[in-house]
Image: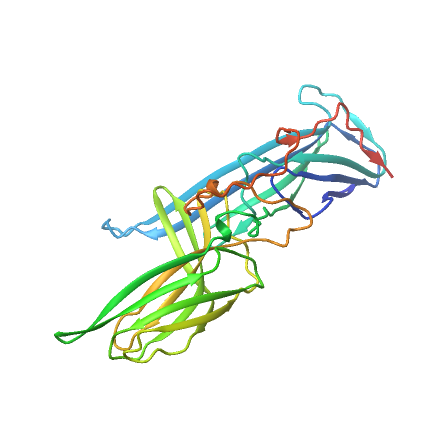
Length: 348
């Protein structure tokens, strides 16, 4: 880089949440004096989705691309110079640091950082150093947004959840008795490391021994051009005690320990990452009887850098009716860079 030995963006900490201040400094280290027209910093946040499918409806079997993008914010700040002035600033040799502070949007909240097979939610800053008659020098540095989901706050995430279904088993022309499954969990919100007690009440009126299982699945759905791409991944699974034929009053508890997984993705309308408990009764020579209980994986205990997340109703695709967790009350600050009258930086 010639006279510019170091050009970098350094954040004061790695992780932030909605409404917080992303702070840091742009470092310019010089081996010799240089002339500078402008030093700019840009902040962006966006979600992006892309996947390709074969269009079997066409004779040529063309590849159809599905792309969707959402921009959450785009802010710019001049650390040296102004847009309207051609004034040149002289920087001496040595290390120069220019502090910045960016307020993240609080309402509507932005989603946590995410990276998946067909899309991402990314946040980053770009610094650009402009010098007369020189190529622009540029550096890009991402930062992480992690919104807190306090699963212990009063509300629907603490309420129990249950679902029931039944299946009649047929053997040739004769119908065996039904298998009835009633699955329950004591609440809807959990955090990694916790153990979920899955209660299964099974009425086996059939002539076959059946085997219950419980599993956690992670489902990711990408949305673009009125299409969606969904995939599910097994997180963990356990098998319960078998229920014998004609055993009509069986109560089984299965313990599912949640491994280290990312929290449920909130506030993104083009990417959903959700979790569910799938309780199945495996029936020999028949399809399984299966029910699903949607759960929320949260972040309690709270991240040391962030505050609890806001209204769950903003989240796309899942029903969190009645949950209303407010962010901490304080003076309203507009999202964007906090602009000083003159940012002179400091030199060492």
